[in-house]
Length: 370
Image (tube, rainbow, N blue to C red; front, side, top):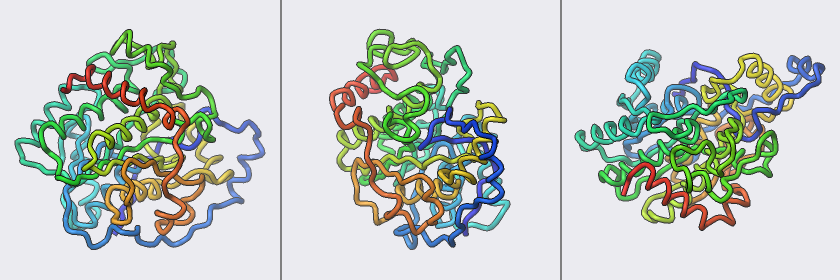
């Protein structure tokens, strides 16, 4: 049985958040044009597995909640840490108030904007003798594009990169350090197509690039942007997704026993990622992307993509990046492995192995994991 996510906001992955079509006539087409509604098939390769223990961040809404509902429906034990216990408990309450499910949901507190909270959460997992078969680093945030001043995490990182990259880097480092993974654990990192300036989304607005890492190199946690530039909220989000792709590839390189893959869920105009955006922008973008231009994806598509990479026996790739053409959710779950498959990363990633390694080294130093 699949449960549907109940909260809606905005997530932009394949397309940029600035891409708003100016013609008023386009909005009137929304009532005429519809995305084909094909019956979903089972996600390939995830049924009939023995019970697994899974950790997923960003599980309180959007694709994270949808993925958790799938995991629990299949009988797995899912750890759902959130920035406060109320938020984590709400996931469990929503799941089990809807139906009796064979799996288990384990709540916890892990604020990705606070390295101390991440440490405390890892300590709690260790004291419970947890062994994780799969880790899904899915949480993320994006600042409002009108923000002029960078917000900061508890330890002083620019908040977007601080949560989306450094928080997950710290968490993953502790899971390895405390031996909380099984021998062949799988790690799935939610990235985005906007990490690539040549992609449809990456071309809009500011372009992602970490440059020569001069911001991190010279200012450490105090830098506003990794490349040393002035704060740009649009670029900060795209840069954080570029960090996600670099992180996934270097994590795989350093841990060949793990299966590490990243992916873009596509443009999903119904998740909590862009909660800081202008509400009117969100509503207009929802109509245009999903109903008019048919480049948007559904929450269930994104949640299925996450579940597919995290669990499917059909996944054989180590260190891959998965994606699909815009509008692929119309094909349903049967498209995982066909329409949704290994995709190209940006030129900066393919040509940036030394940068990838240096980003890891600087991240390790700044979050103080040996």
